[in-house]
Amino acid sequence: MATTARGVFQDLLDGHKRYLRGPLIHPHTTRDAMLGLAIAQSPEVCILACADSRVSPEIIFDLGLGALFVVRVAGNFADEDNQASLEYAVQHFSPPPALIVVLGHERCGAIQAAAITFDPCSVAPEKVAEFGHHPAPSARLVSLVTRLQPAILASQPSDRAFVTSLYWRYAGQAPDEALPSHCERLAADGVSRGQLEDEFRQGGVAEVNDSEFVTSLYWRYLGCGPDKKLDGYLDKVARKHLENEFRAHRLDNAVCENVKLTVAELQANEVVRASGTFVVGARYDLDDGLVTWLTPTPE
Image (cartoon, rainbow, N blue to C red; front, side):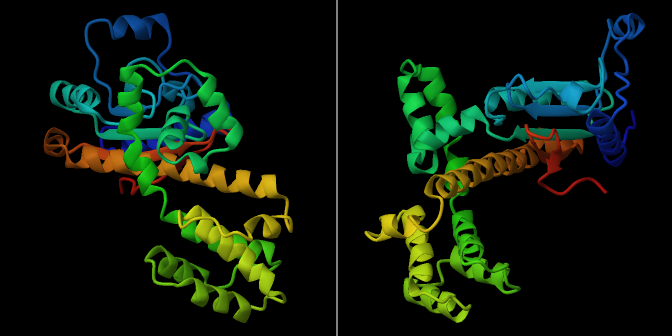
């Protein structure tokens, strides 16, 4: 592998491309490779990943023994112990790993447990019910889920943008060019309900109920108390599909926010900063195997 952050990152990209398209080469997996690493290791990448059995960094990036120093925990967060493991890597390996990757993934069970605990309306009712049938969580599990609360809270502002896009989709129109700036105003709480309805009408809505329908969704999912007329408006679309789509968006946004928050924590870590190790965040898609990079990558 390369030694610079950019070079190591390119090695990850190349390995991931092989994972997606083939052929896989499974480097450094022979007995000779094993014996060569028996005395010492010098990994060039650290990965903080979820414990999920479907997210194996060595396979996703088509790398072998000795290439990755992997720390895994449900929810891929950087508590004291996990940071200590990464600090060990950047202080004791020579040269220190050039890159730390925080790797979250789609439909993370730990994030879902945190969402059920701190924002249950963002999770499908059947998932909430299923969670309730499990044995009472241990004190350690409660501590783990609580550690993920900031990601749940940080994911909420994007709801404004999502509900705005719902308007354009279900009103039968393509998103307009002003949508990004409109979403920014919503996120900043700069738009009242009346203004929102007026803008929807000006956008070409034929029936007032269309705008009322979406503004009702807006208020419901922003925690302002459901509009009493909401159920009637939901009959206009496939209610279950719409709500599940919204919840999937919320959960995935929390996954991404958790990665970004963890990246920021590690970037602020004095030991990591002193080592010069570059920290980057990514999300793994369980459906298609694609890794998406969520934070700036090395140049």
